[in-house]
Length: 218
Ligand SMILES: [Zn+2]
Image (cartoon, rainbow, N blue to C red; front, side, top):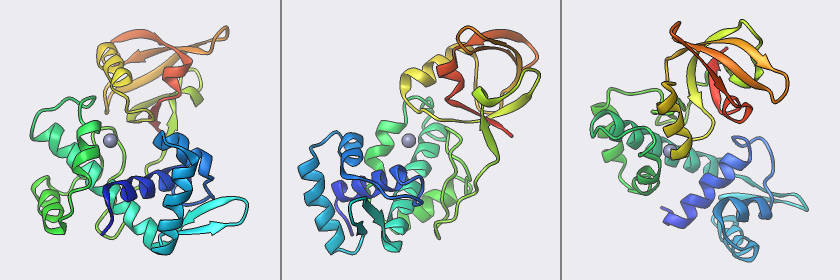
């Protein structure tokens, strides 16, 4: 069992390591968790003693197998709670992340098992992110960023790269949702903004920043 803070470190390292494929340095952890590098060093020492991280000389840390397993379980809980909040408690998708940040630390395997069953074993959270199974397996989707699509390409919105409320509220305002059909009509060379058609209904222009945060089915 790990503390709230330890779990947040483990999750941050997992995310920064691009799902466990590269080393993570102290500074990027400090930045992600908004804390001082010295505190990160202390915590990494602690996690290393517990067998959660391995130090890679001059390069940072990687998660051990156990660390990775723990990260995936915290992520599983986070995403299941987000589904619960949206599907059962009628939260909007921009309102769930912060609450799930708290709920993900509740430590009861039985609770999570029952929650999963209650929700009908969902595979994706309300932002389109895959939910790891009990064994830590994830259904990775074939997806690409709207920004990478060519004129006349079309696809279905399957996820977002940014779960900040302001971004999700903007998508709501524009009528962009998971499952929406999008076709690229034109790319404005001046600033790389895109004119898109939504649901065969309306055309709208999205900035290049926005287009780098929407995933479409590939
Ligand atoms: Zn979240």
